[in-house]
Length: 179
Picture 1 (cartoon, rainbow, N blue to C red):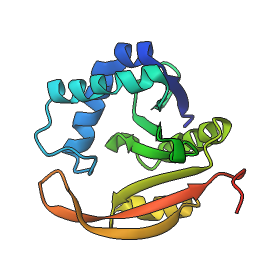
Picture 2 (tube, rainbow, N blue to C red):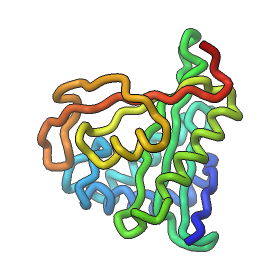
Picture 3 (cartoon, rainbow, N blue to C red):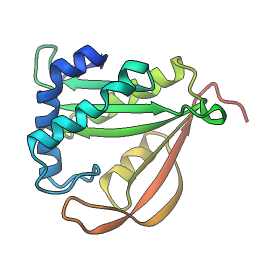
Picture 4 (cartoon, one colour):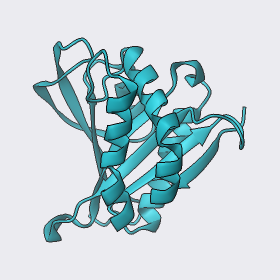
């Protein structure tokens, strides 16, 4: 299956907000730990996507969606937030890599991650960082994609059911980074 990856600007984010909200609701309902608790409704998910608009408009948040076909439904997304502090403008935080449960195992997450990494390199980002729930399948996924584990923080975040879990921090340096 061919995955189509598309960057979203603010206008496209507004246009696809309801579809993205439905995606987020489905993914949280499936038990994925993305910062939301079980019971996330469409209105709250849509409001969260709306909250990203200022960062997308100013260019500090880059956002992509995946589709199983060019005219298919959105089945995944990833973003990165570029640090704005003067001493950190060389880095970005990868955020919310998510794939709908029915689309998992088809290479969608890998395609989204590759696009986000390539775009970061093109934008001059020298270091990407992320966190993911310790013990989740995502840990092995990021390791297999060349990310380096930096450490673990206990009781970092609650899963959708509200139970605290540790998080594992990862980083990946740009091929253009020195040192």
